Length: 190
Image (cartoon, rainbow, N blue to C red; front, side, top):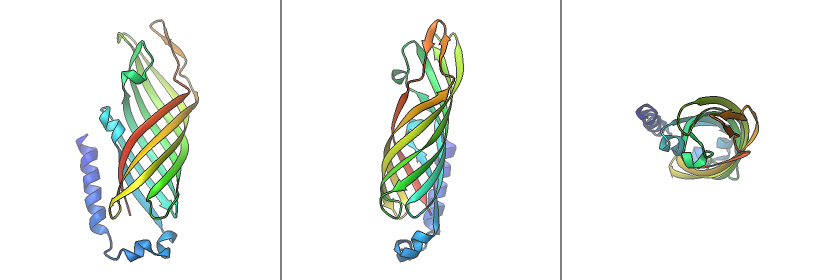
């Protein structure tokens, strides 16, 4: 956990130092003709003992994000009779902001791949399984300082495929069709 936090602090420091003093450039119409890129960290995976890495590239009000998340789902979100549901998620998402300069409301969607493990409640057996989901998200970017932002967001992932129908220690498991998410991201862009 220390390495990703150190990396974010380093990147934030570097990006803030590299900013041009003339903010008129970033607010001019010529700024909307260039590409921006950014990095993000998400609080949810860290809160569950996992990690998150995300990067994006965008132009005007559109951005494409790629992310990797490692999450240990809490038992209250897992079907009774099962425990230790661990998910490694990979996603590519397309976002649209309602305003310029990567601030304000945004909506996004894209495919997500989950590689999961789960145990029976007595931890006698473990099962590996995979799923493809389609995610839809909405959030709001608050600019904290120059290009440093925080973004509360919520999303819903709909299962569209995978091998998640199985029996483990005489108990049937099936991943729910809809899987909600709620978290807080922090990021920076150039």
